[in-house]
Picture 1 (cartoon, one colour):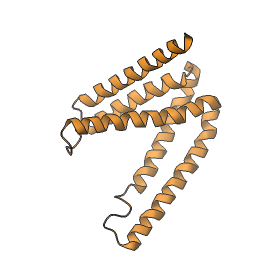
Picture 2 (cartoon, rainbow, N blue to C red):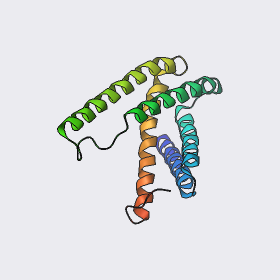
Picture 3 (cartoon, helix red, strand yellow):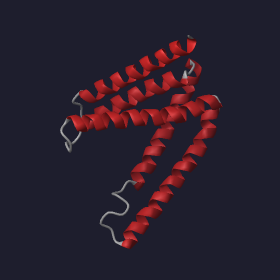
Picture 4 (tube, helix red, strand yellow):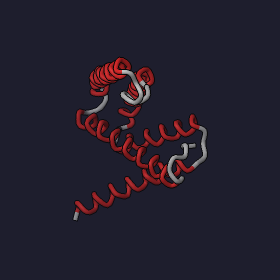
Length: 158
């Protein structure tokens, strides 16, 4: 029935996206080019998931790009090695505090942009955005893991 048609359509969509991810990773690209390619795939993925109108899309992407830039800036500021490995108790405590501070800043950012996004998209689309970002990240990590496994273990990604 109708549920099977919808399920089949969704499975084809996921398969298509996985295929795009495989193509993006299979190309021997420089890291910057690879990140551009991943970003382009993410934009297509989110556009599809959110079913943005052209009017929404025109307003949504500049806001989303600012959000991503700010999110990455916070991540870069706090990116460090593992919290506890090989550290003095003081260093470990500082890492824990930094991690908590980073999570607080990320939460503040999400609250700030929630309002911005809701000026352009519906609450349902915003919920879909949050879920779709998680799905995309999961697919991306799965592809990275499969590439690593196919290279015989500990090889560096190229």
